[in-house]
Image (cartoon, rainbow, N blue to C red; front, side, top):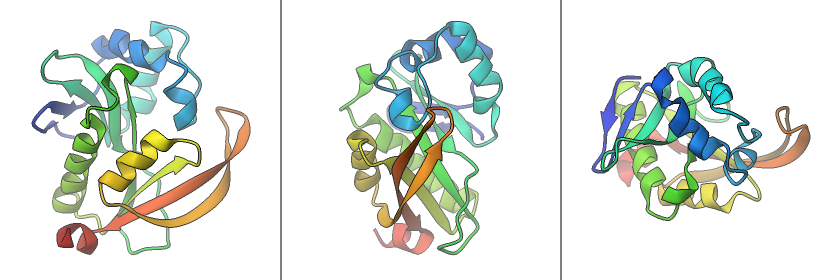
Length: 177
């Protein structure tokens, strides 16, 4: 993904030098488990995630302009569904708890919607959350996604089954907002 900017954020590819910032939020037990992954145990683990998971082409570091620090991740996760017209992709995100409640993730997701519909020419963008993750639900709702379906899914990294709510926004719905 190329670098994107909003009023308060820069969305850019991750760098190895981001490992300490990633560890700072990813070690917090309020972050990963709500998104389906265990807290990071060391900066070395965060570096490995940067080099593997965050190396995916649609994934971006969420950088706070005022500090230059990486405070989260956001991007397209390469998950596709068939219930609505494609091409499609799914947005995923995580944010440092110290930044919660400031509207930063809706700001990042809005820019990803613009990028996905205008530059990637997607027809549908999905976003989901587990039934207990009210913070993610609020981001999804603020950004205009519409609930489409609910299912049970096995969360491998957590070793448990969870209820997941799936929302989507079509390009036409996004343009009409």
